[in-house]
Image 1: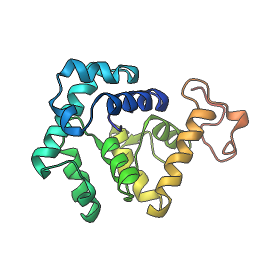
Image 2: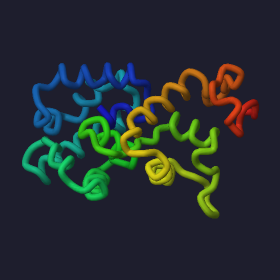
Image 3: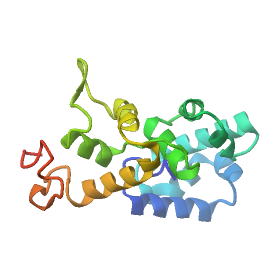
Image 4: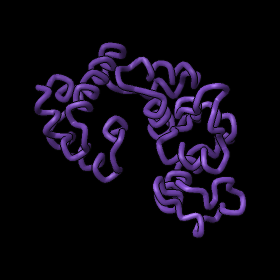
Length: 191
């Protein structure tokens, strides 16, 4: 589901995930299926020709490394080891790893998606530059994890996503409606 959620809406990724699970009886079946069948199943999620081979590669790699598909053991590992284990999977970046760690395993990881990144940058929680280089979502993961108490990661993540979708929109932020307007250095600034 996390791979399906990359660069698409929750409703589309959810629909694609439901179709994937409805079409195939097991993770093994998905891993072994002809690529075209997986692409067809996840088509509503967008980018199916890119995501289908990633999903199959991740499933095959997990099965090869663990003998199955249960990732609960990652919850017992130190966070950085679990994060690195996930990042070694093809197509798994910092956001996907953090989503698995936080949502599936209840771990203290901070997913930084486009909404979290945009809002955190606009309100000044992360700088526009990290040294001489532009700030990236990957760098933002570490900065936000250091700035927010781990017990608040989930609420912070969900809150920034909602705020980014409802008020602090990418093209036309609604600063007049923003509860953070008096604190936000970007309030009223263009996009």
